[in-house]
Amino acid sequence: MKRKKILLIWMLVSVLIPAQINDKLVKVPLKIFSDTLYLSDTIYITRIETTFVSPPDSLIPVKHDTLKFYDTLYLKDLSPVEDKPTEEFKSIKFLKEINLFTLFEIILLLFGGTLLSKLIDKLRSFVHTRDRMRTLPIVLAGIKVFLWIVILYIVLSLFITRTDELIAALFLIGLILLGVSALPFMRNLVGGFYISLSKPFEKGDYISVNNYRGEITEIGWRSTIILTEEKSFVNIPNSLFLSQSIENVNVGQKEQLVSLSFEFPIDYDDKVIIKILRESAISSPYLFGKKEPSVLLDNTDYIKRINRFKLNLYLFDSRFESEMIHSINQSILAAVKSKIELKKGKSDE
Image 1 (cartoon, helix red, strand yellow):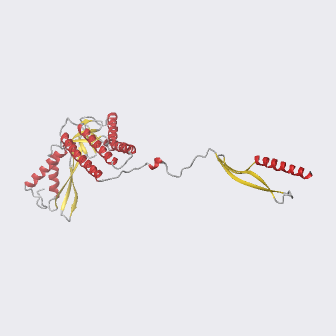
Image 2 (image 1 turned 180 degrees about the horizontal axis):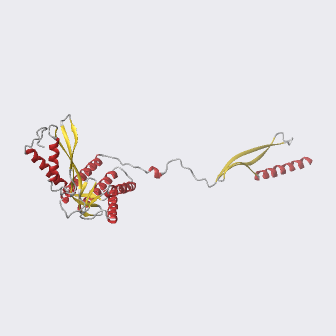
C-alpha cells in the first residue's frame, strides 16, 4: 500500500512539473546595437521526458531533458542601403555614337555655313557703297552671327545627348561674347554723353586729336566725323576723346608753328641757302605775317657731306599746311633752276 502511494505521487509530479516548465519562456537579451536593431535569444524548453530504468521494481526515475534553441532577430525602421549606382546615374550618357553619316552631316553643315557667310559678306560690301543703307550692314552682321550659332548648336547636338545643358552653355557663352563685344559700343556712348555735356567742340570747329586734324562735320553718339586737310572724311570713335587730349583751333587763332628741314650738299654756300629759304618762306601766301620766319643750320654730316637746315615759320591757318609746304618747295626749286651759284666763294653776297 505504501508503494502505491509513492508511485501515485511520483506520477502526479512528473505530469505537473513538465507542464509548468513547458509554458515557461526564457528570453536572454544579447545586445542592442541601435534604436532600430534589436537582437535577442529565445530558449524554448519544449519537452522533458522521463525514462524508467529497469528493473521496474527499483522505481528509480531518471530525468532526460531535450532542449531546442532558436535565435530570433527583430529589425525596426531599417532602410536598405544600396551600394550599386542609381538608375539615374546609369542612364547618363553624354556622347553619342559617331558614324559616317554623322561626319557627312557635319561636313555638309560647315560647307553650307561657309557659303552663306560669303554671300552675306558680298551683300555687306555692296551695301557699304550705299549712303542711305547704314543700318543694313549691322543687321547682316547679326544674321551671320546667328547663323553660326545655330550651326554650332546642331553640330554639338550630334555629339552630345543632353541638349538642355548644351543650350544653357551656349546661352552663357553668347552672353559673355555679347558683353565683351558691347564694351567698345558702351565706351563710345559714354564719350558721346561726355561731348554733349562738356562741349569741347562744336560742328564747324577745327580740331586736332591723336594725329587726326580736320573740321568737324557731324557729331553723333557713337562717333564724330571730321574733314581732313586731304579732303577725306574720318570717322573718329567718341571713346577716343575720353583718353586723348583735344586741340580746338578756333577762328582767328589757327596760326601754327611749322618746322621744315632741308638738306643740301656741303659744297653749297650756307649763307646763300639761308637767304633762299627765308625768301621762299616770305613769298608763301600762307605765312602768318605778324611773325618772321627763321632759318638755322641744324646739322652737318661730313660722312654724307650734307648740311641740314631748319626753317621755322608760322602758318596763318593750320588747315593749309600742305599748301604752304608745296609753295615753299616750288620757290626753292625755282631758285635752283635759275642757276644761282651756290658753291662757297662764288656768292655775290
